[in-house]
Image (tube, rainbow, N blue to C red; front, side, top):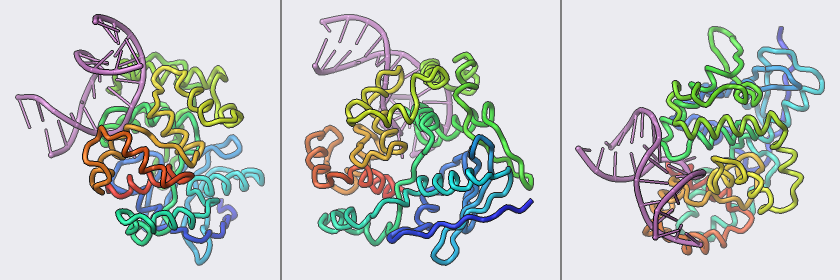
Length: 297
DNA sequence: AACCAGGCTGCGC
DNA sequence: GCGCAGCATGGT
């Protein structure tokens, strides 16, 4: 059953190719598949699993549902999802003006033109992913995520390809942390993950509840109240899911590495220097972090 | 073979 | 309030 395609007009300073490049930068992410000119992904739309592809066509991004039934409401939901995934609402030009003034980073304007801060729209997925990624190298982190997703997530099969959705909180809320030990999660990491899943299942934590808080500090605090969510994780999620423009995952090893590589700091302990550097990017801190991450690949 | 990876908690001081 | 070991495993 071929379904109706959806179109989104691309904003200025948007490069689908740069976004795809970032998605496919050498890690084994199990939640989408990047092809030559397109990406395929499965998500829950209007309560139903839907597999879709995104490609470019002239001035538009074209979304093609590949399996699953998309209702009329689902269509606008799917469009909204894609716009959020690639941060298509933001006007990047103020950020590029700031970059231009920065001798060390001005090259990024040309090198990464149109790269958008790729989001993780789902709060539970973002928290799980950042808990998984704590302290270990990214290859290992992606492997852990794949094991978790393949063990507990729904799957859509199409043309001998399996497309997974991230597990629902309700599913992970009722497992035992020791079940995750066999996937090579550490004991504490397994506890954090199940604990967060239970918080979602018990409705003690949700994206909308977080969004209803009025200040950054309140949102940050609401997150760090849970075991396993420290300041790095909270800021990572505020950046990737809540799209806080001034979120900085302080202490992030990748960020520190990139700052060293650009001779912005000499040592990783120079917190003051980092703070004053970011002051020049007020309102665009998270974009700066994202572009610095991009520079590592 | 140590040492570090997209950190965090719990402990001792 | 601050420093530090321990965590599971892979890569260098």
